Length: 290
Image 1 (tube, one colour):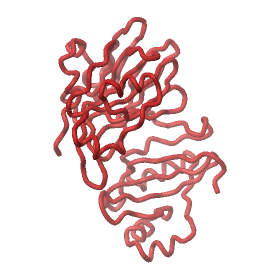
Image 2 (cartoon, one colour):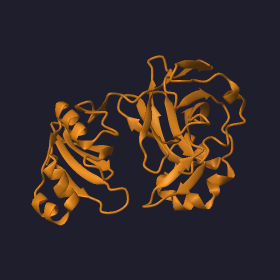
Image 3 (cartoon, one colour):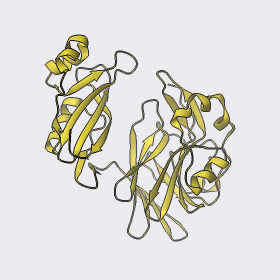
Image 4 (cartoon, rainbow, N blue to C red):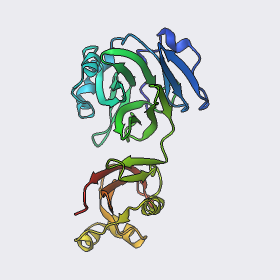
């Protein structure tokens, strides 16, 4: 796979010459009174007070092809990032700060996928840039976007063709910013339920973890007809996964599944053609299950 070099626009900045996290070891760096720390080798965080202009690749033809990966800036910090030429991929309010994820390179893939590079997450106070989270130059995965978590945090997703989570970013009671490994459980529905970390797990393992967390497999009406029309669905049902809803016959082989709990409904997506494909993502719909 061709990899877009991450952080090409930031590699010459002085802060990158400072000691950084390695082998997952914790390191801290003050930005004024702001304490920064990362315990994840794939993501570093360092103080930065001036946002550089985006590289030329940020305005290249890949940006148009990958426009569906971008968001229109809504916050003052996000608009500052957009004015500097970067592509905004996410904006998350976390504690007293505003986080903005932004991208400077795009490479179109198949089936509407895109590889995102030169990507970072800026931590702002208002429009004042305080720090940036980034993938080290030799990292095998890039940063793609920031997505809100409940309770003053965000999840850092990678920028690969098939996006997967990299780490969580949390705000301490003292205002410190820490990049941590993915939480074992993600709170959803205002804390009324939680979802275990099932990313990358085979669906047979994932469903067991979900059931232990209160999410029961849901078999919707019409499954018998889907089994008749879709051999992949029929195969998963035979293997003991009756909650499978449908599967894509092309591309990455996505399949969808439904689970229900006291707080709402959970949709899970897997990818791949193995006997038990692996979890690529999920989304919760809160409220009494229908």
